[in-house]
Amino acid sequence: MTQAEIYLDSNATTPCDPRVLEAMLPFFAQIYGNPANGLHRQGRLAAQHVEEARTWVARLLGALPAEIIFTAGATESNNLAIQGLAGAAVERGRKRIVTSAVEHKSVLLPCQKLAAEGFEVIVLPVDARGIVSLDAAEEAINDATLLVSVQAANNEVGSLQPVAEISEIAHRHGAIVHCDAAQAAGKVSINIDEWGVDLLSLSAHKLYGPKGVGALYVRGGRGALPLKPLFVGGGQERGLRPGTLNVPAIVGFGKACEICLEQVDQEAMRLSTLRDDFERQLLDKAGTIRINGDRERRLPNTSSITFPGVDADALLLNVPHLMLGTGSACTSGTIEPSHVLQAMGISRQDASNTVRVSLGRFNTAEELAVAAESLAEAYHSLQQV
Ligand code: PMP
Image 1 (cartoon, rainbow, N blue to C red):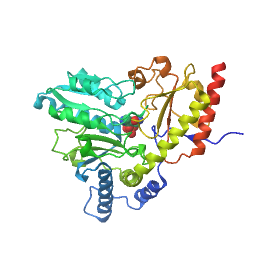
Image 2 (cartoon, rainbow, N blue to C red):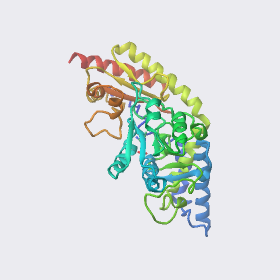
Image 3 (cartoon, rainbow, N blue to C red):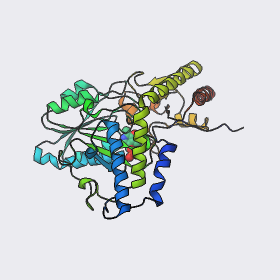
Image 4 (tube, rainbow, N blue to C red):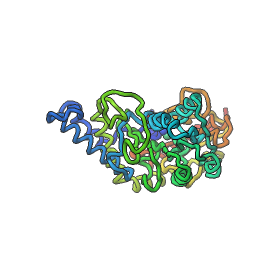
């Protein structure tokens, strides 16, 4: 008998919450106007709903609606934040960019691109828990620093970064702070003022919204920061992100934020209990496995597990009913073991023996009991090979 499939890859993407899907449906064929056309009812209605969605995204962060720029997702938001600020380097006389070794490629690669253009890019190390060293940040951030870009939470091990402390150091030196919060949003509560960041990236599909939509938070709105658009066109999103807005996706994103805002703390508690029980069961049954990262300072839904001596791909082939990640889904397809795990001092070998379990809103305790049992069984049988 084939076993029921169990989805445990919520850090790669989440399904749309049924309430999100329901909210989006009228915006394909009933309310289809272009929000830029305020001259007729269709356009005005669409614009009204986009603005309502903007309010929910802003509320999720404790920000103002005018500070939210809709984009196609966190990749675009990260690029807009980093490349969009590069033009300000000359006027500000600052050419240093500070980031961390565990960032997503959509932060690391724009930084590398700027390094090739003459910027001085400093990549902060992390400790064995995957957490950025504040001493290293203190040393790297100086009065020549234009931008500091550090993620809120890591996609692979879930480590939570000291964003507020890093913002404080950066602001002391007059630098702008960007935070990639694609993984944190919806999983832990965010308060933009407590974190003190100036720019922050979000992606809807990580929080039960649709794919292909996200946002960049810009403190003070456009004009407050020397941010240039990545491309030019119709002037939408205050000229920072021209192009006709994807209204159904934006409405879905707004609904997803509304739901997260309502239940983030409760959901975090439920998921961390499920995750911790799952880890206990797996440790009990599989014995020699290792859980990576800090047990406390990590996302409530994420578990990064090394199965010493057993290749993660082989392990997954033995549990075809479990949908899990190895390293990061965004970089899978490349043979290189995860740069995040390696930055934490985990050997290439152990990194390739590592599986990521990331829980979501629709997982149950029963599913996790099956997952622990199946993974332990597959691990034992592969150890014997
Ligand atoms: N940043 C982080 C931390 C992520 O995990 C991801 C998605 N894996 C992204 C950015 C990119 O998001 P998107 O694919 O929605 O552009």
